[in-house]
Each structure stands twice: as C-alpha cells, then as structure tokens.
Image 1 (tube, rainbow, N blue to C red):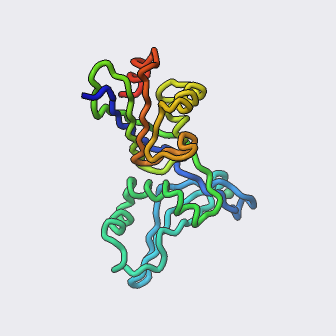
Image 2: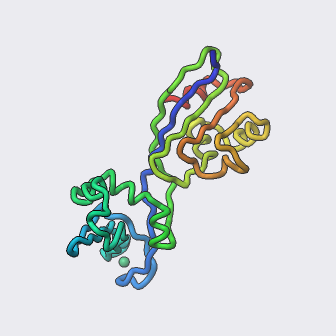
Image 3: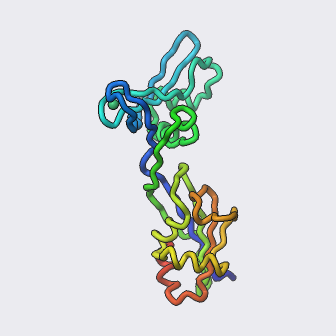
Length: 208
Ligand SMILES: [Zn+2]
C-alpha cells in the first residue's frame, strides 16, 4: 500500500542545437541550422555521409560528417537504410547529438525548449502524499530539473528551495546541486507533499 503517485514524464527537446561557424559568404561567425537532409557519397566501396546545415543568414552550407571514407561493410544496415531513405527520426537523433556536434563544430548553441508527455504509471492509495517522477529523455537537453519542476508543477523557485533544504525533494542519481543541473534520462525525482496544503493541485498538474 503506497501513498505515492508515480508518473512518467517524457521530454522531447524541440530545437536542435546550432553550431556557430565562420560563414564564407557572410564573412563572419553565424549560427547554422540543420536542413534535416543528409548526403551520401560513394567512392568505390567507401562511403561518406554528412548532415547538411545552412547558415541562418545566407544559404551557405556546412557538411557535418557522420562518417567519412568508411568501408560499406563496416556500416550497419540500419544506418545505411536510414541514410538511403532520409529517415527523419534517425536524422533528428544525429541533429540532437550535441556531443558529436561539439566535436565537429566547437561552439554550439543549445536550447531548452521541449515538449512534455505525462502519464500516470501508478495511482496512490488515498490520501496521496508523495509524488515520484520518472524522467524519460528522448534526446539530451540543457533544461534544468529545477526549472522543469517549477514550470510543470507550478512551484516557485523559493518553494522548491525550501523543499530541498528540508529534505523533502530527493533525486536519483543524487548529487550536489542536482536540481540545478540538466535533467537526465532515467532520473527519478521524489517529492514529499504530505505537509503541503495544496498537494492535490500539485499532484493533478503532475499527471496528464
Ligand atoms: Zn552566411
């Protein structure tokens, strides 16, 4: 018998990170954005694949390497199939791969915009007193946990700070300043709402 409501929040970032690159035509550094298109080039049995970005101000392009001079036998079938069919879902994953983009571009601008889907995994035995949120991230985001909780549960930063100081918010994995770090896949946040007068309102905002 548990007085905990367990919900799942699935977070999907909506704006792909943008590399800032020297644009030849603009003669200055500009943000480039993904065109959502890839280019595949064959040279005998060796293949090159790129994701095409465009300058935000002119039409100059930048080819971000997905792989270069790779033997066709060393490329897995799913990747090859995605590239040959311009698979949007697969291309999106590459576009949101911020670590890969950083390796290729250096300076990268990130965004915190996201879409959120809430589902209730387990209802509580009344009275509900605790809220447990299982986070599911489809792509990396710079969205901070504190901001997410504040926006989605209608709690002020100050109130979240009080809950934190009194040990009523806990996170796994835990860590110093965890609330002020970006949300991560498979993170769990538990909030003890037993002494919050408006807990039912908070709990209803946690669900769909
Ligand atoms: Zn330009």
